[in-house]
Image (cartoon, rainbow, N blue to C red):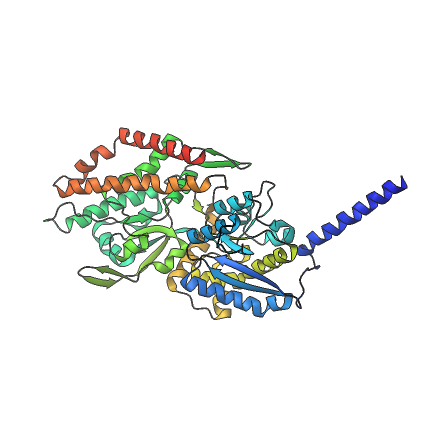
Length: 486
């Protein structure tokens, strides 16, 4: 019995020692030593001004808190999001010539889920107290709980949602002539009907050239249109429990999405021409678009046409919502994940991420990038203005107006992102391309018929019938099912 008691006591002491090591990240017992600094590598996809802003903050961290605690951070841009994802997969797979896994890297939830399934991500929960977690927007923390046991794997560092941006200069003569109102653009149905009016108005400007009306509106990220549009209509298209997904694709709600995207696209009321809709505003092919808050910096200052260019002003509005729908908006933006390694590196990584997301630092990054800060106390116009004044920040008016518009809407909107699941990336690609590619192909056929002398209604008639919708709906459901179950 004495031997058993001694063994139990020894085991208890070992467990206590282990617990103290784990809890060190949440208390005062730091595993760091300023005399023996930990070196961390960070991979991200930031470029241009975003990369410059991130690198400046990394340098400041190294010179201040990093120096005090014994942490040195080196950051590397991997180019684009796909480039970064490829680099991470190559590192995990041990591909010949691949770099070693970084200590920290930017990741969207679907990619992080794949890496987590490979057992390569650190559990961040052990380095964060409940008080730490409560400082962050609740939905941002919940998005990062992708582990099977609900522990945190993705640290929120910068988020975005969607807004509508409008070429004010060229909108105004149309509104003056037709009575169109910006209020009409608050609903998706209102956008579609206004786009038809704009097409007909522009067509009428050249009566000797019938059928040359122009599109009013375009949309980046069609997958968001599906996910958030369905959520606004009361349907969670990807319902995930315990990592298993149930696809909800009711015909009635999808009919509304089809009618308010595919139909106006086919008829030429909506458009998608360049890589992004801000490109289409610049070329004068559309006046307005729904896109990420981070797109504000790319909204052009002038329209460039073959016959010349002219400067334009802009309007920032909340993204439209389905009529009668609930006010959901997309929650997006990559977080940072930490590679599973040892306690010193994992702890140091979390210390850097906590510093980066302090309001004054996070807002500094947001003022350049258009990203939203992730801590609750930072999400207001008042805190933004204070950061600008105290730090002497230079903020582009479009970025400021975009952030201000979202801060003003936060109380009335619910941010949403679906939970991660296996094959989530493949399923999202179906949402992104299936309807949009069909619309682009059919629009080309309709445009050719209009050029041949048919009216828009005549040319589009066969494409917008009940039978056409049902054929697409069956094909879409089949493609989505195949993606989820591949």
